[in-house]
Image (cartoon, rainbow over all chains, first blue to last red; front, side):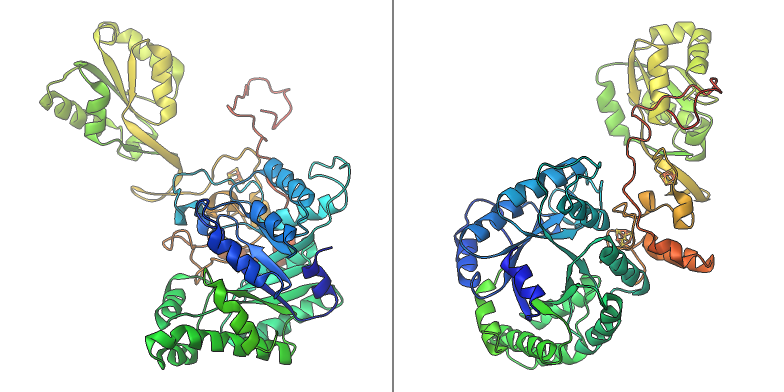
Length: 298
Length: 223
Ligand code: SF4
Ligand code: SF4
């Protein structure tokens, strides 16, 4: 069992960060970020060709994190691999000491940098969750017995601001039924909306050991917030935060965004809204320690 | 029907290269409807090719170009032209072009790109709704096909990218999963949405597909 799972199952308010591997082999910045964060958080997600843009591999970086004493949450999309490759990678990841996997369908290749690639989608997120569960129970997808099962903490995502929300909620429930044990949400900014969502989610997960961590993406400018409102489906930055970001000069925008993020973490923890947070600084991971300090988490 | 679109004229000329004598084949079915290979388009193509210095020895619009025996019969009838030509240019779907392939040993050039199996929305407007997966599961989804109409072929509900009911991949298209959800609600079968669906049997039809429908004893569905 990894320390992310241990923390989550102990009832602690868990904190994870995120590492986006570079495009290429220059890993100095990434290694620095891992070094900085690994002991400060319970786990570090590693993205898998995020936004369908080719990057260094998630499994290799997850393994590195584990080997230097951190805990990795291995992100896995079904976009680039069929069921043979997915299960092969799951066993390989287990062999490398990785114990958490976040099951995603993945962004479409048309938004990435290899637009003419053939997307796979042999499985999608719900089926990947099922496959991991099966492997944990000792068999592969086809029903063949494994010589030694895997032991993964099975994660999934949900988009609380999805519009319309009803089908998204239905899918969230299916992911739980399929075997998801923890969720990291798409970025949330409107805390009232999120508390409403969590009220619903707590109802669904009652009596089940399913943890839900709020996804928080640190705002670094008012432009970024507006961009997300316009172009990132399922992400909504409310007016009061747009105004707050606009109220400070440009040079102080990141600081403001960090304050907002820390304030949200505090609120979520104090009101016991959810079971933890997943903090994303999208390439600026060096600001995460300060956010955690501001939120009284370290 | 099969939706096809003419290739750019320059591309056709480039494929021809130095070859001068050509024979044009159109299709009386789908390519006529889509105006990529009907009578009008073949006549128009003849004019353009002649203006470009080519000699058009023959032009036929087959009843259905995908019918291989028909193609052979047509070429038998126009024996001399078919024999003398340097190349055939086919304005049908890719299946039709390969029927022509079966009927001659000469250079055969596709004059179109074959796009998808399409429904006719209205004249000359088409949408893909079925991708010929070999094992139809429409009834599980209110007869709205997620295999085809969800850009990611998801079988268990929307991705996080549904954008006010539109698809994140192409905002001009509705999210199939919102359509399915609405439809199942209308049918009062929303519990169907909650059913966890396994992945498709992608090899339900072994590709390339083959079927001998004369053999009525053959187990249905075995392809
Ligand atoms: S499930 Fe979809 S792709 Fe398959 S046969 Fe039915 S409509 Fe066509
Ligand atoms: S937005 Fe809807 S149709 Fe588009 S990929 Fe996502 S689930 Fe499929």
